[in-house]
Image (cartoon, rainbow, N blue to C red; front, side, top):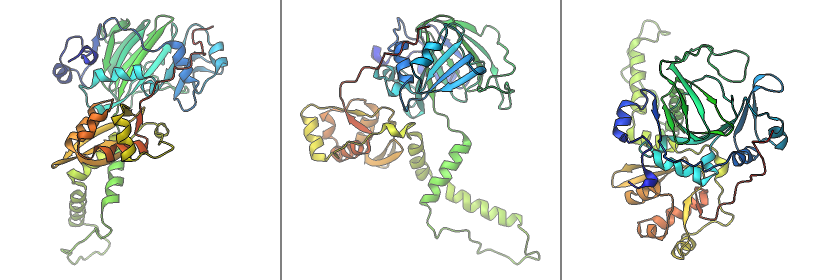
Length: 399
């Protein structure tokens, strides 16, 4: 394993972490990223928060209109100019979609399946800035990027835990700090939290920036609804309720247990389709968070032009925010990318889902040219170009 892909677990193996901590209990990792230097400056984060289509929030403990006021971007210079030097937080979602150096951090977390990764949210706060004591319904790694933040942890909270009424945030009404679960994190330190662990993080410095590596955890409601919708599209119109074993009844309005058992058996038989479930799950877990980020080329790519470009040294990469996974299917495989499934060879599926930069060597794999052209024309792949610098005209640290 190279230094670039070292595990950020303080020397702990992935197996130990997954066995003892993942979705079980919190873990503080001092020096998870030794000598860490943030790949993002606060002013660059402010610039992102001013962009259209970037999901950003501003939380002010004492806002212009009320306490715990939440505002949504895009913001402007006037917004940042009126903020003081304490008691507010700027949170920008999916920063890895816009800043390649931030996206590279995800390579350190591939001991967890890629399709579980969601995005990296970045928060900046001057002293006192926080979003209140709360819980998340998903796993998260909280990496301190610059400055210091104090984290206090409580218990695992039930679904019906009381929250404070009348404010824009779901802040716990009763937050009790657990014994010894109180730390100040320095740059490079990281805290892992399982779902629904109560936590409260407060900035301790003027340059406090925290990277939150979050994971996808769809609710059972979402999964059952999505699975039923997908399966319903696959079922034949002729597949209907049937009762050839029907017997005469003395009550024509009665729905008896025999009928319910028959319905249950027929529905479970329709639902229990492992291959269809694999196709649905792969599509569901690779759906893009922001579909507008997938930009098909103005001129559609052909297999011939694609081959020529790769052979001349051009490179391809997934579009920002693209998600990939794959599933074996006999001697072939299905490559899942951005909510769609593509049948291809196992070697091609594994190569595309495990590399970020695609060069001409991939053309040696069966069916590569045609599939790459399709993915380019869908906007899931793009040609590598020099990245534009972020707009840093917005000074987040001004009075």
